[in-house]
Structure formats: C-alpha cells, structure tokens
Image (tube, rainbow, N blue to C red):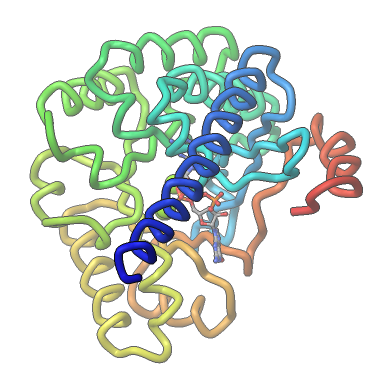
Length: 281
Ligand code: C2E
Ligand code: MG
Ligand code: MG
Ligand code: MG
C-alpha cells in the first residue's frame, strides 16, 4: 500500500508541476506580446524626498503590467520571468525609454531612477540602451539614476562594473538598491563608487520595534556620511519612521507616507479604467 501511495503522490506532484509549467509558459507568451505591441505595460513613479529641503528630488520609475486576463501582475513576479526567458533587455529598454521621456516633461526638474536587473550588466546592451533613451528624450544624463541591487555585483563582476563606470562617465548617477540584504554588503561599496545607497525597506519597517534594525539604519546612514554618499531610507510609511530615519541621519526618504507609485499623467485615464475593471491594484 505504501508503494501505491508513493506513486499517487508522485502523480500529484507531476500534475502540479505540469500546471505550473503551463501557467509559466502562458505568462511568458503574454509578456512577450505585451512588449511587442507595448500594451498593458506602464511605468509608475514614486517620489523620493530630500529631508533637508523637503522637496521631491527624484522619482523612482517602477514597472507595472496589466495582464489581459489576470489583471495587475507584480514586478516581483514578472521581472524574474523576463530575466529567465530572455525578455529583460526589451523590458529594460521599455522602462528606460518611457522613464526618460516622462521625466523630460516634469517641470520640477526632478531626477528619475530606473531599476536595472543584474542580467542587463556586462552584455554590451545597457550602455547603448541608456544612450538611446537619453538622446530620444533629450533628458540630461545627470537627471537619470540607475539603481542596481547588490546581487548585480556578484558573479562576473568586472564587465558589469565596467558598464556602470561608463554610465557614470556619461554623467548618469548610480545607486545601490536594497542595501544590507545581500551577501557581503560592505565589499560592494569598495567595488564601485556609488552616488547613493538605498537602505532596504525591511530595516526601516522594523526599526521602531527592533533595536537591531534601528542600529542597521543608523550604521548605514553614518557610513554614507563618512563616505560622502547620500543615503535613502526606503519603505517609510509612518511619521514615527520618518522621525527615526531623520534622527539617524538619512538624507532622503521614499515610502507610502510621501506617496505611492502613480502612473504618469498621460497614462492616468487608462490606468483608472483598468483599475475599475479586472484586477484592481
Ligand atoms: P525596489 O527597486 O526596491 O522598489 C521599491 C519597492 O518598494 C516597490 O515595489 C515600491 O512600490 C515598494 N514600496 C515603496 N514604498 C513602500 C512602502 O512605504 N511600503 C511598502 N511595503 N512598500 C513600498 P514594486 O513596485 O512592487 O517593485 C518591487 C521590485 O521589483 C523593485 O524593488 C525592483 O527590484 C523590481 N522592479 C520594479 N520595476 C522594475 C524594473 O523596471 N526593472 C527591474 N529590473 N526591476 C524592477
Ligand atoms: Mg529600486
Ligand atoms: Mg529597493
Ligand atoms: Mg527591492
């Protein structure tokens, strides 16, 4: 009987796996189609506030996808799909192009930050994509920031770092995203001269209740000041968290307290209609 049970479980497993593979293939196909006709893909913008002046210094562009059947799909789900099925370059180019063109229209002159996947580095595609986006939009290079996570600097480091150095020579700023969550975080600060360090939201979220998280926020803010690198506290949701990160010496804040990611003015109407329909955000 035990043997038969085993077979039954195996059958269930393979059925489950089969369904997941099918779902995944469908998602890849829809993403491919969305990128091809540029339908259902958006860049939303979230303000990053300078604590000294109280002004919006930067807006982070965040990819959004409205799937025809499933509604809004999180970038935490579709970015890894794009990375694994060879769609990260077209997705990255879409976001860069859209972000630079939107930012060129902002009358406050704020910078725009774009997230880059580790896979986009060191393949000879990123620098031309950034150059093209800047040229087409007319956005000055110093108003563009590229955010890379710590994992981007692991593995085949040198060619990735060369891409970042080239961008920096062009005047583009480079930020280290989700700092403190990766492996051997401090080593990355030596590997590349970052313009900004973004403290991962997980530390900010727990800083009021867990002293060790507050200590990490303080240590990173302090490190930033000593290195002459601006630090951004991500995920600030409450006045209490704002007071804490200010006290600990962060230069900028980003989070729901100051604003959620929002569509560009030109997309607002279409996004509102999609929200009313399937899969409100
Ligand atoms: P990230 O770059 O660290 O972006 C910050 C994430 O935190 C965003 O999630 C944002 O909506 C969320 N967030 C901002 N403020 C708060 C807050 O106060 N509370 C909470 N709970 N969350 C907050 P989102 O937009 O879902 O993006 C998730 C991740 O997906 C990003 O993390 C980034 O790593 C990736 N991603 C998004 N867009 C792109 C893209 O265009 N290209 C690439 N390669 N990755 C992207
Ligand atoms: Mg980011
Ligand atoms: Mg982040
Ligand atoms: Mg993140």
